[in-house]
Image 1 (spheres, rainbow, N blue to C red):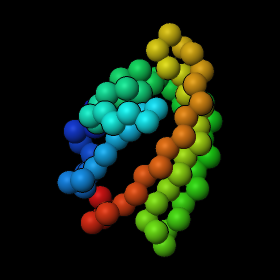
Image 2: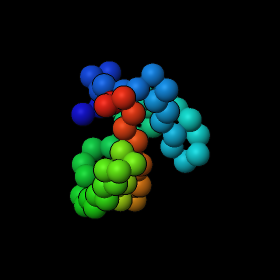
Image 3: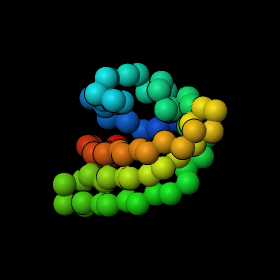
Image 4: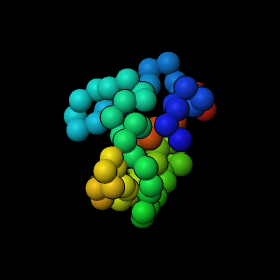
Length: 75
């Protein structure tokens, strides 16, 4: 769960958290422990998906989480 090295990512992959660009594997990758709720919205025409979620982080704090993924070159 906390190891992004197994993901097929595009060469220009970027990961940002709270407007700061981080290497994959940092930030919530290390501290998230359990997703409590998720709502996914897919846009297959643009190759993107959005996620709104709440998850447990660190010392079991409940955190709100939003994510956007874009597919390029099937990655």
